[in-house]
Length: 183
Image (cartoon, rainbow, N blue to C red; front, side, top):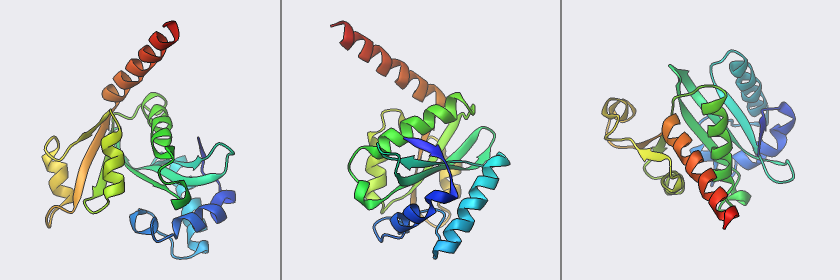
């Protein structure tokens, strides 16, 4: 489902990213293929420096379909950026990618909180965040951060995923699956 970023995936990912249904919502925008390659190399370097964590989302056949990244790492917290190519919308890849990434973040990298800043007009991403049982709308939970993201009015909603909530979700899911197998 996820693999480390690799320049070899740039052609496929760039073509998916520039689609008008995807491009406006991408945090690291590239306006040419060469710029996308540069940003990918830079992302790989920043991960080596411990400043972000980024993965390529792949489908069942290991073909690149999108990118998921934790930006702005500070104090075991960061901001999530995810995009998936339009041909893969609505097929469940977003949830699978987030589950795999959160498992890595929380249990391998010891991240405590993942924030998601979602533009209020981005209905697709807001609905996807609301579907995650371990995700909370944090506009009122983190008013200082919400205000920092919205200095000129409400342009972004703030969501958060905390390690404890995600861990509880994984335990409940495993318990439910175990009970179903015993039945």
